[in-house]
Length: 159
Image 1 (cartoon, helix red, strand yellow):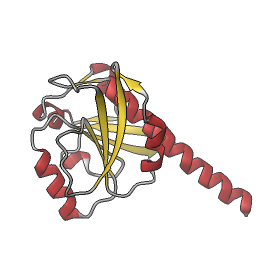
Image 2 (image 1 turned 120 degrees about the horizontal axis):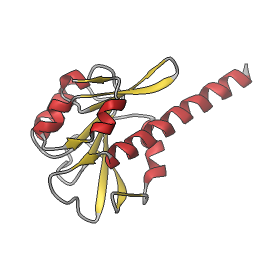
Image 3 (image 1 turned 60 degrees about the vertical axis):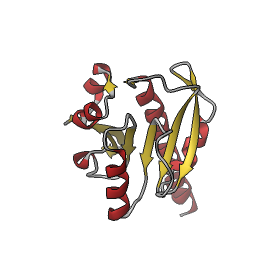
């Protein structure tokens, strides 16, 4: 029994590391309307095991700038974020966050099912033991973000 538990935990850790790597790559395939400054800030909201995997991205470089990771609370300002990862949030908090973002040029990503249909730009999921993602290109356009056609071709679903 100990072996199966260890392999399950290991598989989960690997899943989150892979999801963090996907998010790192999403940055490379996204164009923001203006310069991001000296850093690309990935901000996390809500609980998620992925929050720990983000630590591997700290101080890495993407698009010629350094990635910084910030764990925020719902009441914190989101204006300095270029990417927001939405973990587990209650319905009211989700609505509050999405309405505060409106047309801000912030890439929103989640691994919570069904949120891409509600305006989140990229939703990560697992199908047949593979990580897949859906993209809401309309939400990205409203926020003035350009997602590369290369990334769109890799998506399982594009809205």
